[in-house]
Amino acid sequence: MADSVTPAQRRLAAALRALRARSGMSAAALGRELGWSQARVSRTELGQRRINADDVAWWAEALSAPQDDRAELEALLDEAGRELRTWWDIQAAGGVASRQADVAIFEAGSASISNFQLVVPGLLQTADYARRVFTLGAVSRDTDVNASVAARMRRQEILYDPARQFDYVLPESALHWLLANDAAARRAQADRLISLDSLPNVSIAVLPFTASPPVLPTDGFVIYEIPDRPLVLLETLTSELIFADEREVEAYRAAFAGLREASVIGEDAHALIRAVMITDS
Image (cartoon, rainbow, N blue to C red):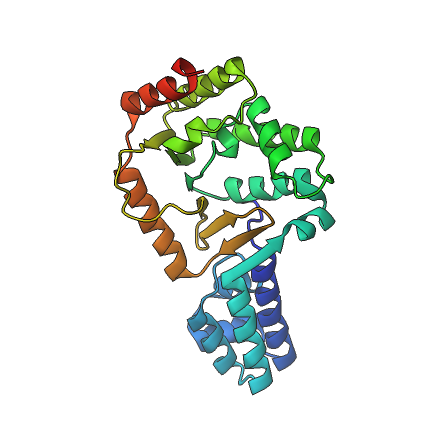
C-alpha cells in the first residue's frame, strides 16, 4: 500500500521505536508484554497503523518510560491527531504541483473517499476549471499552474479503479461559481460531472439551495478511509489541516452523511447541474 502516513504520525512512530531501542527490549519481548504480535509492534513502529492514546500509554508503561519521555510522546500524539501545513510549508516542500503527489498517496491508500467542497472537487475538474482554481488559489506568484494542472489530471486516473469508492456532495453554489472561463468550458465541466457520476464507484450528490442541511456547511473537507488510520483533510486559503483523531473523523463522517441525506442524486442531480451550468450559460 502507498505510504499514506502523515509526517506527524511518522514522528510519533519513530519516537516509540527509539524509546524501545533505548530500553534494550526487543520487539518480540515488547509484544509479549503488551499481548501484541511482533508484527503489530513492527507496524506501530513503522507508522503502518493508527496509534491511539491507549497504545502510547501501554507502550510507555511496558517500557517503564521516564516522565520526560511520556510527556514527549503525549505531545507527539496531540500533533499526530491534528497537523497543520501552511502555504509556505508546501512551497518549501516542492510546491503545489508536488503536493498533488502527496494527495494522490492519500487517495491510493483509501478504500473510499467522501468529499464535500465549496467548488467542484479536484478529481472531478476539467483542465480549464483546474487552471482557474490554481490561479485563484495562489497566495503568491510561486505556483506553477501548468505543472499543477498536469499533476491533477494524472491524479484523476484513480477514479477508474473499481476497488475504490468516491462519494461527493456539491452545494448548488459550487455549480454557480464562474470558475470555468466561458460557456463552452462550463458545459464541458457539467458534462464531466454527469459522465463521471455514471461510473459504478463514483456518486455525485448536489445540495440544493432549497435544502435544509443538518450541519452548517462552512468549509469543504475530504474524508480518506485509509485502513487503520482514516483522516480528514481541510484546506483554507493559506493552509491545510489534517485531523486523525477518532472523534473528529467520526464527526466529519456524521456531517457528510447528513449533507448527503439532504442532497439530490441521480437524474435529479443531473438536471440541476444542467440547469445551472448549461441552460444558464
